[in-house]
Image (cartoon, rainbow, N blue to C red):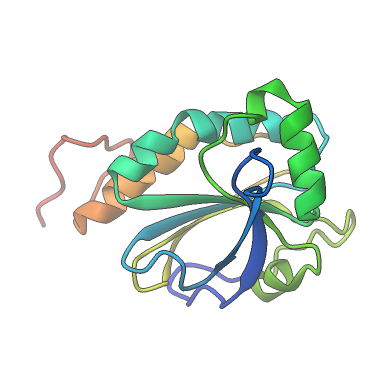
Length: 178
């Protein structure tokens, strides 16, 4: 699995960005958000139970990520058509404002080293990537355990200070002075 300090891989994937007919899909690649922080979060597969709770949770905080000049990008190994059907079917996913990337060929997941060896799906992984495409944070949970978007925001805030931040540090608090 790629980790902190390594370069995030190059990719080009189809994403679901809308429910509006004719505007559902766009291609997003590793150069699509120049100069921005990126928060990639992967889930195992669509039409499951834990995944929509996380996706909706990240969706509720998308404005908070945008306020930090960070682009939120969700992804799984499902096709863009499955993503679209799931968004149409699940009330909590209809109004998402961030792209849902389709890694149907598993290329990005393989480059990252996050394919679950038993289930064959993306592991439940979150990456915070800085504007230079360097991985600054990796968060992995068991396939059965959802993540907390607030913790991802807290770590993003800490990384953006470029300072030493103690355990539990929150935006606006003092940083450590060596």
